[in-house]
Length: 229
Image 1 (cartoon, helix red, strand yellow):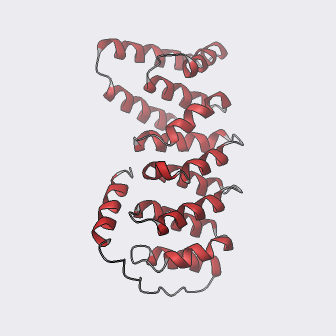
Image 2 (cartoon, one colour):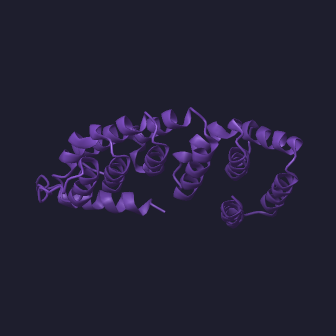
Image 3 (cartoon, helix red, strand yellow):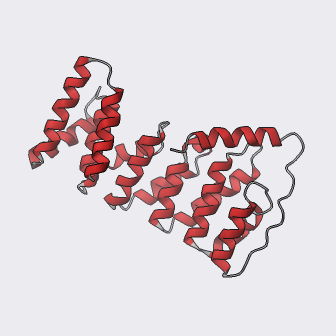
């Protein structure tokens, strides 16, 4: 946790723009260093107090979540689907440690939200790590949505494919078989199928994309992958 917290602190410090923010950040770190029950209560109040900057909420949620305090859950879920990948990655790691039974359900909802697909990489990775009952159905649903979409987020689809292969659940076979017909996913899908079935999967060579979509697919992939930290 120490290295992770140091990384978080350095990232936050680099984002501060005024002397007032710098002073407030220093005060927050001093509170964290106290490590007392009273200090944790103050950190918990930061999570719900109005007009708190996001960096303060993130810091408080990190400290509380790493200590197993479930009051950090809502803030961590918000950060899990945020537009900044570094914040998403940090939230995912803390949520995995927190052990809140609501985590898998929240991650599944974020991973399958069609309006937040571009930000769903870390919820997907968290579902793979959790291996919860919600994991496979959510990953399959997210993958099938990408396969059916006109403008696909290939990085997201590939994360689903690789995650399903890592989990190794036979319920993923139909979706992975469909993914193997796409050139950009064929190798990853074949490897995932091989892990599940224990057989050497043969790729279908990748079916050609519909006319006029290749350029869009390439653009979608570059946009999606640019968000991967």
